[in-house]
Length: 283
Image (cartoon, rainbow, N blue to C red):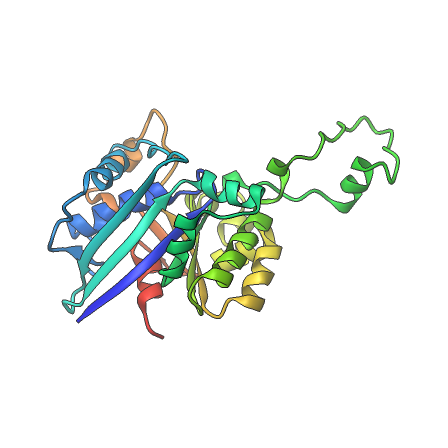
């Protein structure tokens, strides 16, 4: 049996999409994860996939997809029941989504992608969030209330770059719901999840992906609950930890897929294909 899925990867710049693809491709090609999908037929054009995989294996930051670039990736994968999954997904620059938001218009290419999309992987990097400012700060900014004489730094003038991350993500989801196929299943991937799991604070390290979203991005959480029929949260550490000049801990794993950590609720796995498995599951 063959299952064909057109999966859209979305996320703002440096949200973890390329690193996820590199780790996923390595896991599928190596067959190290027994319950994951594996490769029987190599794609004809795999130069970009191999570039991302090699950077992942060497613990190097994946090259960012430029605004004028789009890599169309097509994979034919199999599971232990010999079911075939045809997976097509474009790796699109995060800057493109920012441009759509700022200019309030979308390209025809992106519109065509939406019309053929079956499911979505939405990536969020905890270290790249633009937080919302308080109502009190806004009132000060617009001169409605006076600045308090407490030597606080004055707020910089407002720009589009200061719009909270969750506002842009909700706008993206609204575009998908308007122009894409409905209902659309969405896997919410919190990347760099090791920064949460390895946090010094037990309150932070013991949280779950859904609780993290509810606390840190409440507007996004409320929108999902009220508007999206099927979605799931995943905390994903595709790198396994922060890359630096001393990566011996990451290289020490006998199987490099063991450095991957994927959390749904309380359970943690090394299977990076879990967010995709959930998308193609008919339940």
